[in-house]
Length: 343
Image (cartoon, rainbow, N blue to C red; front, side):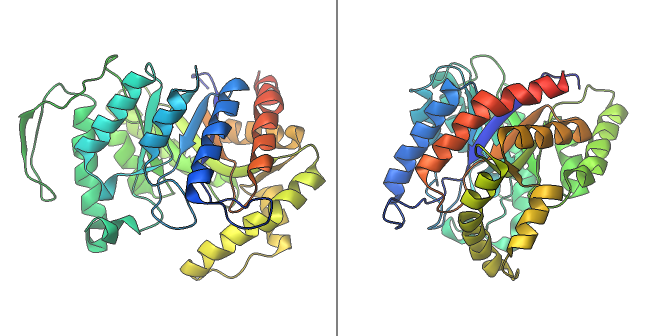
């Protein structure tokens, strides 16, 4: 691994339960999330990501606004989306919002661009799902030009052309770290390589090592281009408690609620406890004591030559108090153990 390892956390702003077991208002979830990010900064986490969704069970539809609030209350942690649904947004406005965040945070902004695994934003903003591929391809082409050129000329089918167009605010450092989020298609890996952008693998099930062929494909693409390989990152769900038993018991019920709700929309059968335990033991759930989670992260980093690991620490109604405890353990105990194991 040539790049120093970065260890991050991300969340979709899942609507959590209060002390009475009832869902908290979106506004309170957002305020709690800002407190979670502040704690992540305090305990040394390298990156904090906020996902974009447009549905009742997630509170964050505008990651950049929440990240700007976090930037004003933190000092060193890098801040980004996880992910920004570029297909249903305007790439120029996305660039402007993140270049503004980058300026306000002193150069700490990042963006992870993706097509999104949920589709609510398409009808909400007037886009057709039949244009799913074309929208992402053309908008990514524009965004890639914006982060690498002073003025952009472009033409396509999804918006009016651009002719020698400059966009403001310009980047103070000349760099806005931009990742491409990939769920597991070779075409998406090759697309990231074509634009010379870092690859973020969203691994939410199964043995993480099965993604090694995508990493190898990414490396081959850059070898053919004769260029150095940008970082590869991994995003996976997880939860840390003092012991393995406590982590599984605290996480299972709320994770199952979230997974079954989304799975029901997609035709998946309900998840049982045996499947949950199997995914922890052999798959892509990083649940357990600090030592257990650290060992699993270290193994994934080795298997995939990853330069960053991001753990999605939120899960459906899992309470704010438990999320704060998980963040504390991740920063103070898991991260030092991972680095020790990989030294």
